[in-house]
Length: 108
Image (cartoon, rainbow, N blue to C red; front, side):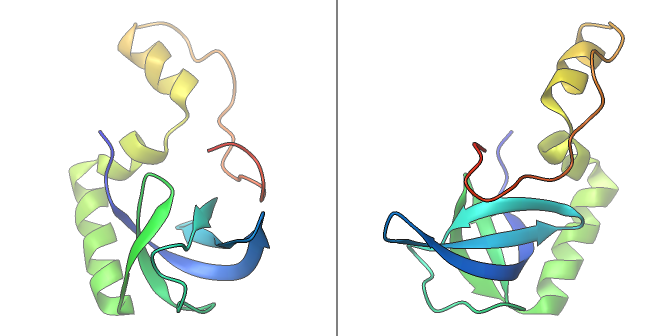
C-alpha cells in the first residue's frame, strides 16, 4: 500500500534544478521532491506521496495522522524494511537488518 504520509522538512536542496527536501518521518529520513510545494521551509510539515510533497499542513494535523497510522500498524508497513516484510510474509527469517536512514541522492 502506498500512503500519503506527513513528515517534517528538515533541510532543503536542489537536485538537477529540482527543489528537494530531506523529510523526517519519525526517524526515517527520505529525499522528497518539492516540485508541487516549492514554498515549504525547514520546520514545515508536508504530506508526501510516492516521493513528492503534495501539500503543506500544520504540526497538530501531522501528529494526529501519524498517531492514527501508527495505531493501525500502517507506518511499519510503509517504512519497514522490504526484505524483512517479504521474509515475514513468506514465513522466513529476516535476511538482513533494516536500514532506517536514506541519504540525499539515494534511490527511494
